[in-house]
Length: 66
Image (cartoon, rainbow, N blue to C red):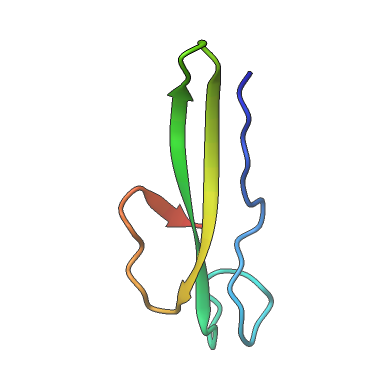
């Protein structure tokens, strides 16, 4: 079984419509994915984590603007 989690809509808090890159946004949301991990019993899983960072922050390696 593969379990996927994600964020369907980009988001940036602050003034604006809630979309990443909006002028006046004070934060960005980045999503980091684990890729597929196979457990000892053969079960495959995948996970994602979303992080809130200050606007203008570098996006960590392996992550994307969410």
